[in-house]
Length: 162
Image (cartoon, rainbow, N blue to C red; front, side, top):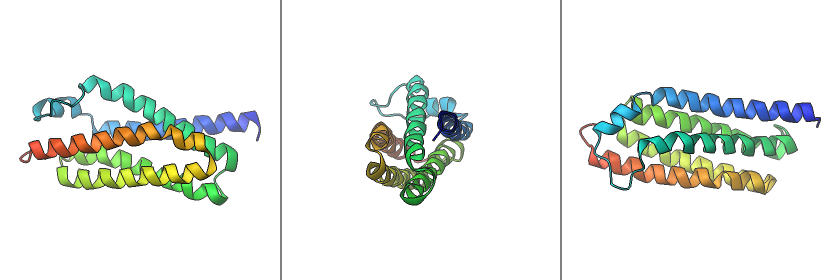
């Protein structure tokens, strides 16, 4: 694969990742105000942490997908893993809307569990193809695990809101 095609692919995966981030961000536009109105557990991070963490995670997701795509393209054994990756990206975006825009605590919790399963499936698929790509998704899995616990707790603490 030519260097030009490799770099174009990286730019494409980064662009996709940040479009997903922007769509989720759009659904979370009122998150800072909404978050301040909620009862939050003591162990919740300050709101300023979320932006830098998500920026790093979306970048790692893009690089992971690019590593698999660069080696195998969007065909054969890689096609399934990359398709699952696309599903988890869609689920990632949807969660922000469910929780921050539509205030659906129970639905958003079920959805984040689905997201977690999709991330695990992506990691498993990538592991078979490119271990570095799979390892790049481990921090994402850890963060979504934390986010699931946090969103569940917030939902339980705020039953009249979520």
